[in-house]
Image (cartoon, rainbow, N blue to C red; front, side, top):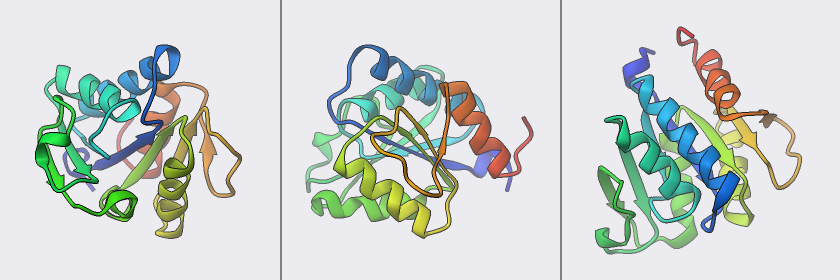
Length: 156
């Protein structure tokens, strides 16, 4: 897979601020700097932070929103997929991602991590809410993106 083709799922807390927001923002920037696409739930918190980070360096962000209205996406999303599926949209995010990076999170994030792991996607977490078998823990946004690169066989 070329680096240009990679779609990296970013999931995490819908309400994030401070250090958590900053980490997600940095993850988004690092993903976009590699020419990769961010795939996320398209709403606020971690999703908004990663979207903002990616868009500020010219990256592409696909937001898979739970509502039927595309207008529910955060302002940094490039393309919105309106599903009307609520949390069931997590399947679309996990299936569309070549690797998944989680930043904090709760039950919704846990479902995305479980689905991505079940689908055989490489999964890495920053500030994971619980320890999940098959999910690698990263100490920083840089480590998380480096793990994704290595797992996808991309040049570091």
